[in-house]
Length: 257
View 1 (cartoon, rainbow, N blue to C red):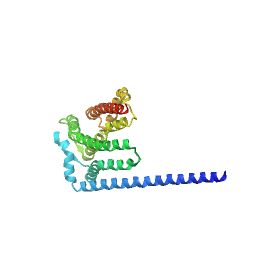
View 2 (view 1 turned 90 degrees about the vertical axis):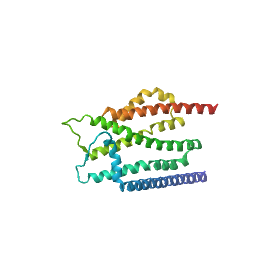
View 3 (view 1 turned 45 degrees about the vertical axis):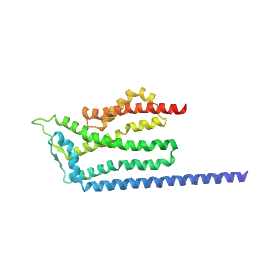
View 4 (view 1 turned 180 degrees about the vertical axis):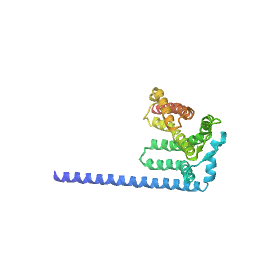
């Protein structure tokens, strides 16, 4: 009947309007979260710049730990850019937990109750692992790899390190370790949600280990020491993730009985 078709068209129009309204609301919420993250990052970065001398001394410590080597800048503006880069990375590292919190607050309304219980602990642990990875890179990996690489100097081959190259290496390693140390959190989250099975991970263990070494080779300098120092902790974290995943699967099975 005509009135039924008209009613269907009106219902469809209302449904489309509601969907568009929800989409716009999500975009506004996403924009608000981004503004909070950007504001926190800028605040920490700007504050860090005022302590850039202390910050640079702190970042040069891994180089001075084993080698008495000076850094040089070859462009008039390079020292200024290094201060900006160091301040920006400091802002990123220390505001990263807030980024994760904002991510949690954004996705939480659309999650089921059981998903909400797991997401917040995972985000908290991922922030801790990120900082642990950054600290491990700064305290262990970078000094060791620098000592290994600079040990090849001779009386005729002396290092003349550019400040830009050194800080690119240093900050790249810190970010790489911080991000990749969150690798097990992704696995545990997928196992907990039932998306991935531990048996599948065990069958693909050799492939995953090869992929870990490939990623380590891409993200670290072209020397085997740095690659191994990144790959080995990731392999250990992978095995720990599988063990935790098995415990979660047994717990889920016992609850369903």
